[in-house]
Length: 455
Image (cartoon, rainbow, N blue to C red):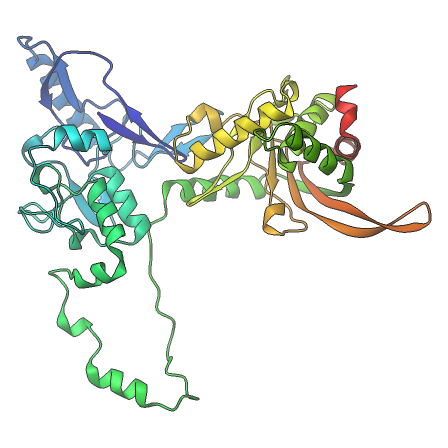
């Protein structure tokens, strides 16, 4: 019946009871506070007048709080996370895309969930949409009031693809622009989009032919670029805003210090090769071994597996490793729970599954919050060494560089070894220099001699 758009994921909300949809209070496409009444499900002959009266009173009360409420809710780890204007007790405000107000369906029609199933079942009575996302009806997917009818998923897809919603006509109920309209517009390509002009576009905004002629007539050696560079402003996504807020609360208030060591990876790389040859379905990565070794090392050094909690230092009994995964809008850290007790194969399968759901924005909050330690690996991008910012309330994060062959001196001989540099960022309120150094010693020893983990 709705979608909950948090800072890191989009989740579907389902009705918790059965009955008849008696009243729709919030049109599709609008953003409402968590806990707000959006519709009434009851028995066919049940009196719902009291519910409607209370719903109206609640909306009046929350309207007075519009200027004082902020779109913040509590995450699973106690940290604050934004949720696109969805806040308990907050004001219901109309959603916007690129500054354009988005209305619900005409006449308070039920909100159609933007999926293939909903398109097939709820919109069969609608005429088929012509190619390119154009549809018969009201023209540009707008009501007579000029408000766009756009589903939340379609709005987000249009923003990501850089599609002007005013150039599209919706094929949903009442001319609503839905997911398949955006997909059709993306499939049609730039050429088709250039042919779709906004009715508000002014001829004067197009460059005059005389200007073009003058530009092409200039000598090839003379630059035709003058003045400051043109630019475009795009709204900050909820995920990017959350990342910005959390990093400001990390690098400033948290006293960071950094420890770097270099590790010979020949034995670990050989162990990985042998495992993958024995079971081709596992596809163990070097990062999977690093997660396992980090977890085992944390159990041996509980002072690093901790967090600062103002008046106490909290020591965790389990190594829950956050694994940094790059997604389109930023970075998310799915958590491998109890990694010290899992095999490398289990860790590998779990990381792949979590990463796939993270890129699809289908992680549950408990799957990306509450880590006790994090690992960020940029080695696959050819980065030799870097420092990472601690993710509060964790006390440390490990930055992993690329593994590459280098000449080293062993027993008086110059030999080639696979070396990898790692840097641990530490919260000095919890981890002292010697404590962090001992942890890295254990981490280095286990990674250079991975068979020690089974002794």
